[in-house]
Image (cartoon, rainbow, N blue to C red; front, side, top):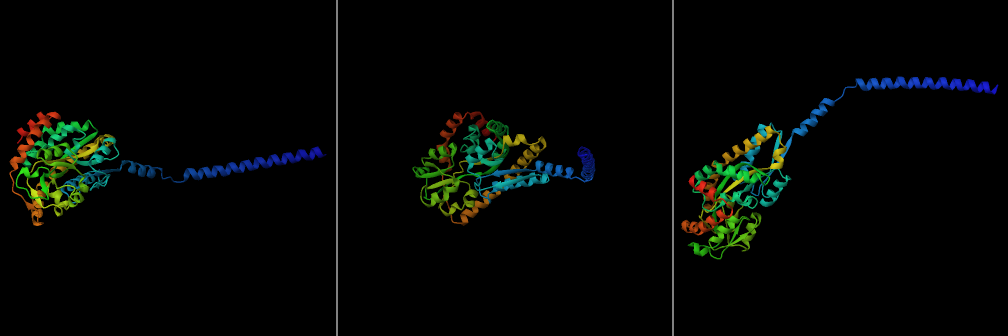
Length: 354
C-alpha cells in the first residue's frame, strides 16, 4: 500500500515539473519576443563611434610668442584646415615653448609624439645639416630674393633632406633679416671683439658671430631677457619683431643693422603622423601649409617695418655702421661651411636667383 502511494506521489511530482517547465518556456518566449521587437540604437551608436574616429586633433608647437607674425601664419593654417575639413580636423596652437624648445619639438616630431611644429632652418640643420644653407649669413639680398629661393628647386631638395629624418615640410615661412643688439655703443666691427653675444643653438649663428670676434653664447630665447638684464651676455642678434614681441628692447640700448641672416622657418608635420592620414587629408594639410606660408610673406615685411619704427619710438638707438665689414668677415666661414655640409651647389643656385 505504501509502495502504491509513493508511486502516485512520484507521478504527481512529474506532472508538476513538466507544467513548470512549460510555463518557463512560455515566459522565455515572451521575453525573447520583447527583446526582438525592442528598437535598438545600433546604427546611431556606430555613427557616433565613426564620427569620433574621423575627427582629428593636431597640436602645433612653436617657440615664438603669440603676438609674432609666424604665429599668425599658424593661425591662418588652422583657419584653412578647419574650414576645409568642416571642423573635422582641429589644429591646437601651442606658442611660447609650451611643448618644449625648438630641439625638443623637432625630436618629438621624429618619433611621432607631436604632430606639427614650426622651426627655424638653422635649428633644423642640427638634424638635417644641408637645411642650414638657408641660414648662412649674407645669402639673401632682399625679400624678393628670399621668395625666389623659397619657390625654387632648392627648397624641394631640402624637403627631401627633412623627409629622410622623419619630418615633412609643408611650407617655408618668412620672418625677417636679423640685426645685432648690444648694451654697448660701437663704431666699427673691431668694437665687437670680445663681447658676449647670445645666439640660438645653431652652428651658422654661432660661427657668424665668432667671425666678428665676439664670444658666441648659446642661450634659450626664454632665458635671454634675464641674461641681458644680469649681464650674462652683452647682446644678441635677432629681428625687430622678435625683439619687440619679447620686450628685449627694455634690456639693450643699441641696434646695429647688420642684416646678417634672414630667418626662414619650415612648417612641419611628423612623417609618422602624415602617413597615417587619408590621402584626402594629406592633400588638405599640404595645400593649407602652402597657402598659409604665402599669406605670411606680406605680413612679415609689414611687421618688420612696423616694429623697427616701434623700437625707435621706445628709445632703442640705431647705430649707423659699415655693414660691408661684417659681411666680409663672415664670408670665409660661409664658403668653408658650405663645403663642410656639401651645399656649395645649393649656394650657387641661390646666388644665381638674386
